[in-house]
Image (cartoon, rainbow, N blue to C red):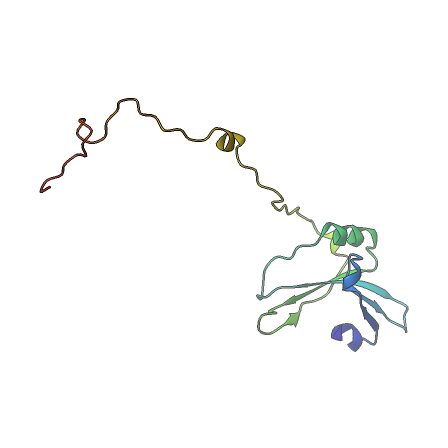
Length: 133
């Protein structure tokens, strides 16, 4: 927000509206509108993830959509060079686990104990003796 205000723009934080971007920035002199998605990284490098909604808006509003990445958020936040039209770069799909399922047989056929005459140890039903016992 400070970066855009320093450019002389009127800036609004709208991240709570879930519109696919976090900030609007309007340059009153030129009329340029920017729809800005802000992503932060705790470290100096790393990967960012965009939601399906953010990607859709980035693709639909390519002339206005900007991506601002702030790195070093854990110690010394630094805005990297803002990226206009991030949809022009290749995107890879990130999948996340939504559900886990156990094997149904593990729950419907419980373990059973058998006594088929097999003896443990010495074969006479008594525990096997070790040296010195």
